[in-house]
Image 1: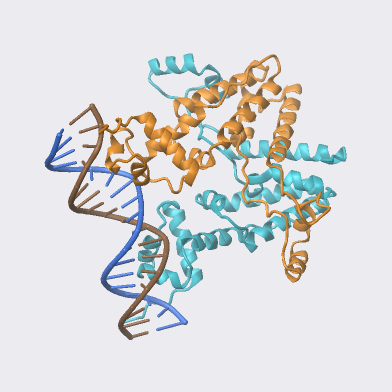
Image 2: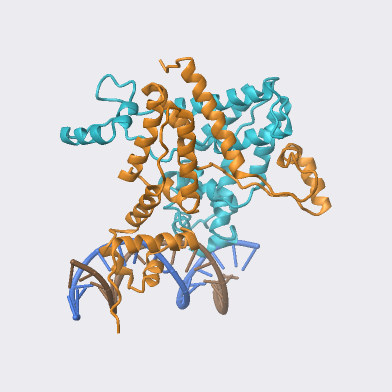
Length: 217
Length: 217
DNA sequence: ACCTGAACACCGTTCAAGT
DNA sequence: ACCTGAACACCGTTCAAGT
């Protein structure tokens, strides 16, 4: 009879990530993770100090997988690429956004990413001052996050009398919801398009401020 | 001996909000709320179906407190005002941002707010198409949220040998962290400034697109 | 109509013990 | 050095009972 291979931190983190990918981060508990690893809950505490540290480790693992954009003379292309790399990496883990937002301190993986990102602006000729504010303006978008507060409603397909009600109370929403909808059936929004739309708007604005030698003083 | 006044939904919600303001939304539990109301946990379930509905109600109450900006011929001033109203209202409740982001459906209070917001763009002469994308670009900022992913580090005040290490590994971050710091002591960032900086950058971009009759086709 | 009490199926984590 | 078992102090929520 084979002895079960020893647990280690990497295995704990990898399993936790797989479990969160599958079930969502709400369903990820120390106890659930322990049974997944065929081990008693307290066995985990030899490899991570507590649940917060487990989440820290998961986040670092995911952030460590973001490729680095290379600067080839054009800050705008490089920054854009870096953001889209981050977006692609973090979108593979639906839980990552929420968990990252609950982290209290910056880990080395996070600082390394921010350093690389900041360096792109400086290399592109931005002042430290402008870089500072521009990074704030990007904020979550630097990680490829969209700050969708409420999901899009998708194609509206309600009983006629409710549609009537909606049309009375929410004429603007209805007008704007699906501006390209020629038929009733539709796909809702193209997240990637909306993301790049906003990103490019910001980059355009950054460029303008740079041109005019903007300063916060 | 006075009989304890009856519970009702308003009282439950108001107490829940006060408790969340005080302790944070993590510490808000049905059981904790029940003891606060001097009642047994299950008594709450006559007034809210479950915890999710409690949170829904809390969010609606807070959103209901956002004033409405009035349109006086200038979409930009109106939108800006509306965003800043939302920000002011939601900043009084530190838990609101996180809780709002976990709501699954749009309540009437939410729809009413989005309707009023959307109407400002349309009244200002934006096409439905542009309004749609512009609202997405605003996303969380429409509620006055900043998507800060990691807190600012505050003024760096470390032992000299660690500063040395930091300077080696994170030169760009150090350069950009406190661009205006002449002394070692500093205030960190002005959140309101950073928020308005990004907001105005977006509004400026919106205006440009409107001028040039932008269309997604 | 509203509140209670006991119970169930979960949590994260401690401590003392095993190998 | 690593894993276990029992226990503690919490959760949200059900069900059946009280007034």
